Length: 43
Image (cartoon, rainbow, N blue to C red; front, side, top):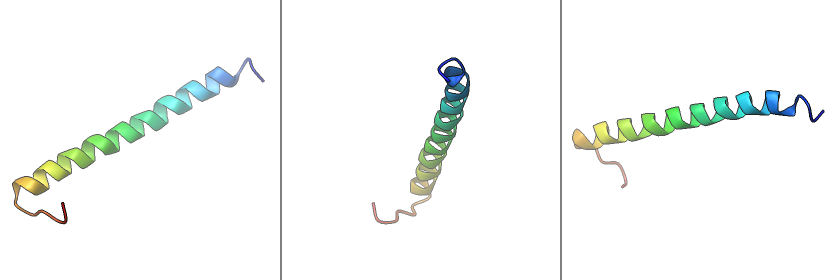
């Protein structure tokens, strides 16, 4: 089990972190665009 664990865990970790970074960047980009247009909602 220990032999194949890094081969499964490493790509899974990279995919999860990549998806998280994509949505974080997208959220900040959309938030900046929304604030630039003057539509502030709540914050």
